[in-house]
Image (cartoon, rainbow, N blue to C red):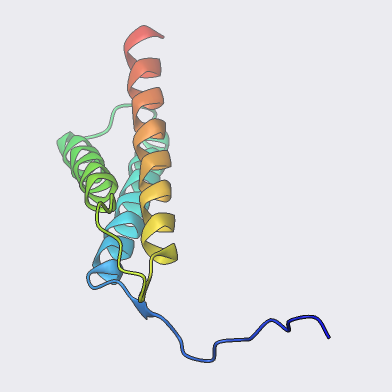
Length: 106
């Protein structure tokens, strides 16, 4: 008989600090959406706090991207939520760069 594949019932632990990184990515996305909604409702004439929310969103997204880069991997840990948070934050940074370039040139 061929070798049967064994299933491991032991769940891998999530990397410490993953949920903080996930929450910063979610908060960054919420700030991005709130900036867009408030700016659209005020027809582009948003108050100063919109800029502060935008800068906070960019800083949190960049922090999450750089903090989710793992250089030493532990085979006992699950890195999937960490990678998902890093990729989502990277997409948020790209969206901010596109929005800033659109605002500057059009």
